[in-house]
Length: 111
Image (cartoon, rainbow, N blue to C red; front, side, top):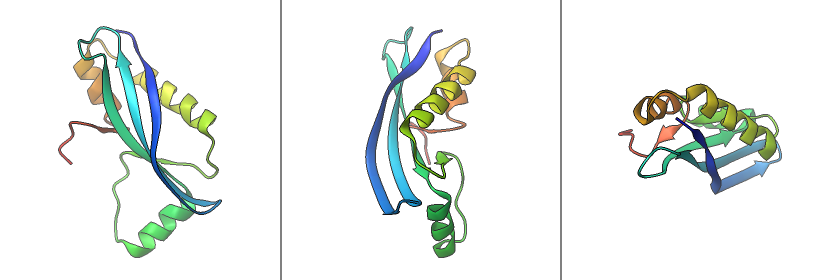
């Protein structure tokens, strides 16, 4: 099964300071052998400073769907996402979606 990064779309961002940011992304993963052609996932890139501030105001936060970066670099982010997709590719679309969902939030998740 051939799987690849289709699109990476920035949906929302907050920059409190250069080292304090939150960026919400939508990830389109393309499946060559699928009737739909792609599946949507989402994730949030946060800085350690943003996470520290968030946890100061909240008791707990679950980590799935978060990527933590000290300095935001879109090229490094895309490289990491492509690597994750490559290691998550399985024999069929369902196994691949399940594997990718361990890192990103799947559009059909019930969270």
